[in-house]
Image (cartoon, rainbow over all chains, first blue to last red; front, side):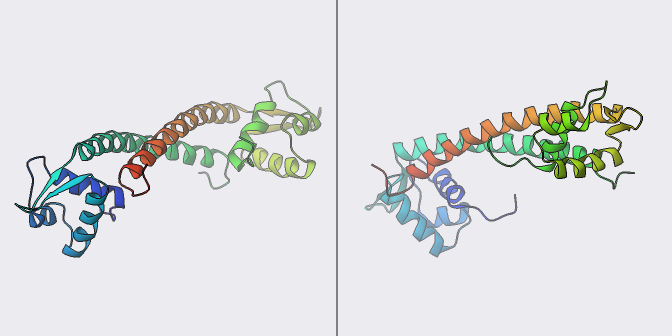
Amino acid sequence: MGSYRNRLEIIADILHVVSEEGVKKTQIMYQANLSYKLLTRYLAEVIETCLIHFEHKERLYMLTSKGKEFLEKYKDYSRRNKHVEKQLNNIRAKKRALDELCSNSQT
Amino acid sequence: MGSYRNRLEIIADILHVVSEEGVKKTQIMYQANLSYKLLTRYLAEVIETCLIHFEHKERLYMLTSKGKEFLEKYKDYSRRNKHVEKQLNNIRAKKRALDELCSNSQT
């Protein structure tokens, strides 16, 4: 939400752009909103960890089955994360109400 | 869970011991597991914030309606807190699995 993406989020964004049919590097760069330098570093990583396969002949980046697995797990993780974040905000509000009940600054 | 109680937890523990019928200071001290010094400080606070009423004649501490309200809200807060804590542990495990999928140290 407007903050810097962490490593996991960036990798998920890259994998999200890279389909099974394959895409070019520039396409990933624009759609995943990454600098050439950062993208190059991350692509090296996801290729080394077999999340993405590089098709040398056509210079296409393609999602592997491991990459697909990562994306599915990431989707679940991200959904749960958002859900818990909402609950945490709710709990923080409840804590503030309790803090007010036992503080002298009440009105 | 074996860690130090925070202010809210200590106040909830004190209020939990103090019933509407009234209890003596020593009883609170032992049941809430607090030193005399700490208890004296906290009792002054909860009396000032009207969570507990001190009956001077019989030297009894009694729960006020505001104290009851605090305890009810605290119960709800505490229950939700535990629930979210479990979910957070679950999410952390999922994050670790994702981290492993995109790290080189995999087996």
